[in-house]
Image (cartoon, rainbow, N blue to C red):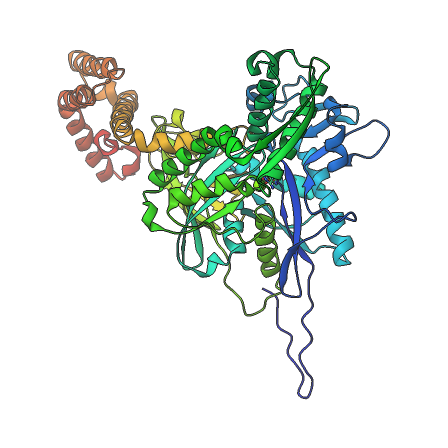
Length: 635
Ligand code: ADP
Ligand code: MG
């Protein structure tokens, strides 16, 4: 909090120093920077008056990287050194990259490092480094326009971005020399631009960009935006509309779309065809028809006119896919169409009149579209940046975000114990106490997980670390406090402290990069679908852990005084019951394991009783009770 200066009598208060802050929409296709000037949030243009900066960087051995339109224009001539869509790779692991590999025409360096590198004439570069170039260009534009260094920026990220992707985005900003005031989710930024942060209710944000479609259902209550559902399609966007037009052209020109479009055409011709198709598509948003002139792969030239009605039939199936995702998101959010208070259009592709029509039809209302859909996210980010920089004293409505997936740790039996549930408002801090499983255990492994499912195998592993140096104690005596702290950007720090000895360990979660938005979405969906199965699985795992604990306690008791208290015959009976329990532990029937535990307890009742008597005798003889932990106490 900035401190208020105390005014001397007769002096006026010091004038409020306006801090230069900006909002940045770091997009897959295009990026923008915006700032609040004279009380109005607006995007900033480059020297040529262009607001959108294509998120494309061309690297060369001799010159500084080229960013933006010039790089995009060079993509056809120099595909390997011209990197577009770095956002698809940022914060991702090599496995994701291999999966996306087919779609991305770059040369990836073969390495066993967690972060993929792209080989270019300018060196081997990570997606973070590529994004940093885009950010640097925008920051320079901002400083030139605003006339001074930026105190801080708010950068937007998709709602589904996980810890790794958020951290990588922050790393890119740091590399670009920017101070990140906050990462903000794109749909939240769009809602802020429309002033929806002042209106309680449920809002749908429909974002159709260049290569991705995102639908988010947000709920605003008392200044907190909650993401009720985030869905979409990471491989559906304006590029697909271009492709639909290109196929139509080839068909009209008598070149079978199937034989031509993706197969026999040389890349240069195909790329030019796509450019013409894209220009026609954009013209059709303003005009009823568009004329196209293209060079054909067979050397000829084709000219024709595409009218809006025909264009609509070409793209209807693609729009229908976005609407299906909207319905699914509404179902996931458990809200009906009638519960939606406002629909916000985001992304350049929502300029297509047919898209607007169909979205309006689905939601039964006109969507909000007054703010330029490809600038709305940057504008919302700028408003938030202005607020965070302290330029609006008195306006303390701070927008809060929530975490999209639950965070927890692994407990015995490969189960996940959630510490911070999904949709918790951030920043947040929680702790929970855990204990040791075995007598004399001096180290525990802490495995941090993200996801909604009960079993470790179904969640995403974020980090592992060990707490060592726990003083040897009997099982269950150590008190290990595990703390989770998430900052305002959704980044996680995990600590573990043994309370009696004070030994501690902590980890800043820079998770192993690598989960796609579709995976997050499907994890959420699976957690709903499998709620029943999970319950069964959880009970089974718990039962197995119980069985192991009983066996472990009995074994350690036997090691201590088995010889002293049991005859050979008695010992054989106990061992047999122990073996029977062990044999059932692979069973998938909860009741079978439970019965074996009960049987073992019956078989050992006499031994437990003897041990208790022994303990009492020992206590009376001045010995510490803790030296003799009755076996049943740990059951
Ligand atoms: P992203 O969020 O993926 O960075 P944008 O929101 O900038 O992308 O959207 C880019 C897409 O919007 C491109 O496919 C572009 O062709 C499309 N687009 C831009 N203007 C128009 C328009 N007037 N009509 C139709 N599509 C448009
Ligand atoms: Mg976008």
